[in-house]
Image (cartoon, rainbow, N blue to C red):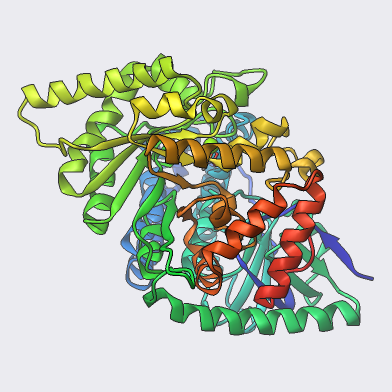
Length: 583
Ligand code: PEP
Ligand code: MG
């Protein structure tokens, strides 16, 4: 019998078919016993040795990752080492051994279970994703205490699809790209370490497929369709056959498309389309430049703020400067923090709101927390001395808000001037157009900023009143709805009339299915995750801007959004011989 999951998040795109290898977490049975008073010092030494060995195991992985992947990725393990070096954790365990006379395995397990329970109860997705780090450390320390050396990935055969509740960063980093063809996890979101690693390694992956480990057995035949976000278990023969063809086509197309990275992105009638990258974590920058993009169209700076501690001005400056220097002279568009909505950081944990997407989010949060905003602006301005940095304000909904943000920016510039600190004097500051009021008032807003970047992810949710993260109503979330098309046309016309450059950076810009439509609506600058650039460039190079214009005009006359969507998919499938199934 075949079964299908559709609830997973695509961490890294692709299609793979293979046998499942379910990685069961063989958490060792934890021995629990009391220590005699005269043995307490020995027990503490045993614990210290295990912590020491765990630290050196992790440092070995960290070095390997720095060589085989990148130094940024190896930083994930620096966090593990930091946890191990945290005197609170180590001293607390020793204290339990000393006072409660519990053995070392029992003591450390009690502490980590308490930590992970607190993380689970936090309701904060980012903090919850750190549970896997703590559990990994717990297992490693206990294995070292018990002299178990676990090698969970060693018995995986070439071409296997790994299925697990989640992977520890160590496991993901050790995955040999040639051996493991894809993976699926119960937990995790787009920002989890596992998802980040998957993208960086180019391994197709679906995360957050809630029941995966409960439903899949080792040896099951699996189809991982990380184009549509599906996992199919033991598919019937005809589905398997169909997907084998898709997999084959996808691999061939990927290889062919790779050749596009050195070619320009011009339509057949010579209109240049500028492709930029969206980045959340520094390791994505390399992919953006490898794909031959024109720079960064959206640097989601809030991801720097998702650790326990807020980054100070210096840490932010270093991160922004690295990006600026890496892409110079190409633009690096740094969006000031967009937190709130589904992006909660430790700082805002207490800020529970009934309607967070309509609440104190993005620029609203920054204007309410001016000091934090000023620090970020100082860091961005200082980094602008090292490259072509641009500033992007998120979720602007009215002129007053934009004026306030610009006033603070100009105050911060004056501070830097007085202190003789260098920055790019003609730095451009733009706004996200992602709220209907901003789209309607775009001509007015244009007088107070240098460019627009359309955030279709939010714009669609606010126009259609469809929560972008609610699976129950996902089918109503339609970027091809006539109302959305009208808004997009209005924004593009407004920008042209006001002579303000406009780009699109929502997911729609990276979905090749919509490329013709967006060109037809007048957009020439598209910013997207690097994983989608080849496909978009392929469309750009195969069409003329005139036929896109005619298509957009025609689609604008449709009344029904489902029809528009169906037609867009049909055209894409027909024109680009797509492996993508019907919507
Ligand atoms: C958007 O809303 O389209 C966007 C790019 O911003 P985010 O997805 O970060 O809200
Ligand atoms: Mg947005």
